[in-house]
Amino acid sequence: MASWKLLLVCAATTGLAWAQPNEIEVRLDDTKAWTPWVGAAAKEKAEQFSHTFGDGYATFRASGGGGVMVWGLRPEAPFDVSRMRFLSMRYRLTNTDNTLGSYLLYLSSDTAGRMYARNLALGANDLIHDGEWHTATTTLNDYGGQIASAALRFRALEGREGRLDVASLRFTREPPRNALKAVLDWQPGEAGLAGEAVPLASLLATDLAEAQKALDLSDWFGAERVTVHGVNFAVATAGKVALSTSRKEKQRVA
Image (cartoon, rainbow, N blue to C red; front, side, top):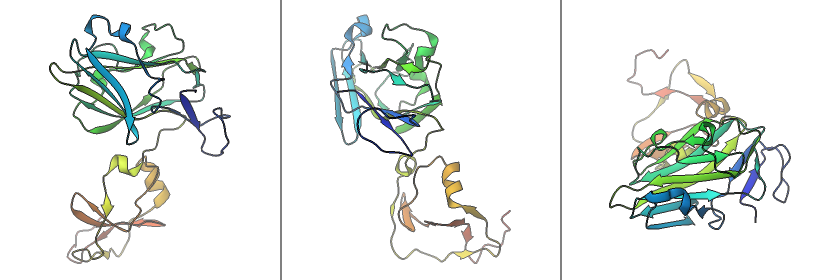
């Protein structure tokens, strides 16, 4: 089975090959495709390590020994990134060393494992190690139009189980959009909100689609009343986005 899939915004078809894709998403659910490269960890290799997939994301674990493990991917056919400009990874790092040198994400146009600077796509010090979800986005280096191998690598903190969760790894032609849930944890709010919001005499209105684009979002709220961290909000779900305030507000909003 090929260890990748291509997503096309404007067309749909069957099979694993797509013509002129706008996005390539690397498959993370194939635990047999991502294999431990024990030799690449050398003398720092961890004693225990694993790769599992569940709840929509891959989990890589390592502990004991030197705490380092590498998981590599060599797709049956190289990824065609000739039209891609951006790399994006949705990740969570827990009990991991943010000073580990060389790379956390490695990409190469061949399978030889050469350590050119362009192959070190993301370093441990480029990412946030706080046990929370984050999205890292960067421009894609020049790989001659193809990527033939990839690798993920981290070092667990001493005496702890290090963990790297990856929800997505994508190459995109345009700046990547993120699902709203990945940016803001929201829930439908109660029907009655405390207080009353009254539109200003002169509304500050913005086209909803443009607001979505400016926030790099791929979707929008699914309810007009939402709750964020216990605070209720009323939001527009179509058309114009209007700024509202209470009757007590007298300060002019420019």
